[in-house]
Image (cartoon, each protein chain N blue to C red):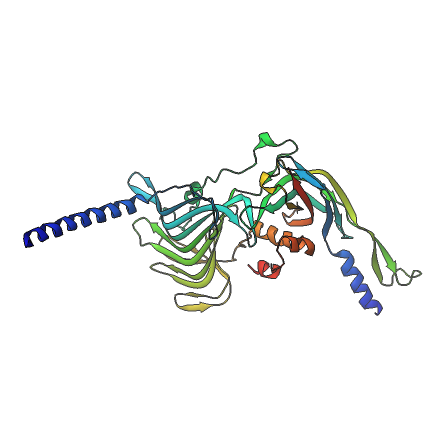
Length: 283
Length: 156
């Protein structure tokens, strides 16, 4: 009897092992999922075009890893406003994203093209011109209008040098201006420089960071706005005079102005009376 | 109100650069058909015309998911100028033009845009609902100016 119980226990163990391996294999298969959301609309994430979990994408140049993005969760959806949904514009939302980027220039540059490619950046005009009889309207800028990231880490990797690591609780990128705003516990860490602030704005045009709020540079606090470029050796170089860098979200402005222009009677009909225009402007 | 205060008040009112306007929608529009509106843009600035480069239009309505959905904003090239308002200098002492004066606006500058297509095909999902048209314009500084809104009933 005891001999049989050993055999049964052995079979159970083998089945358990097989199931575990199967589960691990299923989890690995979640990579590079590109699934149609069956409902198309979720209360939490809005109208979803596609989503993926445990997504990663790597671009190799020979054996050199030029770019890598790893994220726990990725959604492409219609652009969300404060109160409205922009049906003709899209946005990407990443949760816990780590970007690894190879740096081959003396000043660190950020290449957004890899992310834009995820959602077809060149799809500029959304209106089917064959269906139009009166005009050929175009949308304002790119169809992929914005990229949002919760818990972002960017590892800039200069060749044969130490990485430069940028982290923040939230990041958002406007694809038309290629300006990236970071909010919440912004940190930049290299071998020669450490920056901490509540927020920062990265400009692709000027390849650097605008720190408009009080910030710490190597543990010393500064209260006047400044602009820094980061060298591939990890030095933070102050640029003077600081270039004008602004995060201007045209669709947010349009939404705010449209709500301001609506008569109260229309706001009542559409249930928009609770909208605080002042708070929209503040954001 | 003394003269100085009156002078300041009137000048501030008269020189505020504002593009305003009225937008006229058809009473109703059929789904899958173009929606065309007209708008009258007005400039209350006595000192300068407003140069416009694009119109910006949108249609807000039922998105089918409990929130307001927006078709657009769509932009169309538009080369137009809204002339400055017609204004007069009124002198406190007409016999002595060297004395101070105030500005009196007699009419806003205006331009009318007819046959402005908001969308080529009104979405079928809007059927039986009220939709909001918003018309605005981008000026030569790429600043958005909203002219106004109007409502249209979407029918089958």
